[in-house]
Each structure stands twice: as structure tokens, then as C-alpha cells.
Length: 127
Image (tube, rainbow, N blue to C red; front, side, top):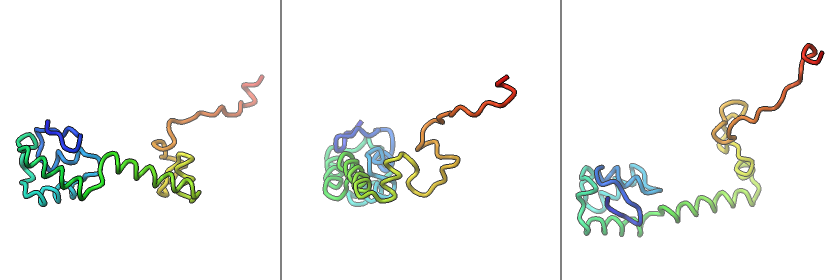
């Protein structure tokens, strides 16, 4: 398993796929990195030489915001929204969907499992 910027990438996959295992790199950016390094995107990541790995690492460090730095940046952006108390910040704070999705149904991912509330007892059950 080759190691790039502190992340183990799978050696049995093509470079364009293996680079996506790094947080912050998607399909387009992976292809762009391969183009900058003059690397065939179909070559297996395990077949890369040390020189090619160092070229990829240097491109990543100079041009891209990835891994810990990107995670920190995202968290700071969310904290800023909370601090200025804008609508999106309030939604983050309450744990509700942020981008306008409905919440009457289908918001279980953000809201978590249902919290069942005991309903009123009927007249027949009270006797």
C-alpha cells in the first residue's frame, strides 16, 4: 500500500481511484493531479515508483487543501455560522437539515432515531 501525505491508498486500484481515498480529493481533482504529474490514470497505485509518489505528494501539498486542514476549515466555517446566529447556523446547532429539506418526514439522518412520545389514553382504556 503506497503512502501519500500520511494516508495509505490501496495499491490494487488505479491511481485515479486510489487518490480519492484522501479526504478532499474527488474524481475531477484526481484526474487533474494525474495530468499535472504526467501519469497514466489507469496505472495501479502499487506500481508507482517513489519518484512518482513524491511528485504526487508535492502537487497535493502545493495546490490542494486536504485531510486535516480541510476538516478544520469546514468546522471553522460551521462555527462561524453558529456564532453569527444566521439561519444555517441555527439549523446546525439544533441538528436539523441545513439545506431546505423537509422535516415532517424523512429527516431521520439529521434528527436521529424517533423519540416516541406517549399519546393520550382513550376513554375505554381508562375504565
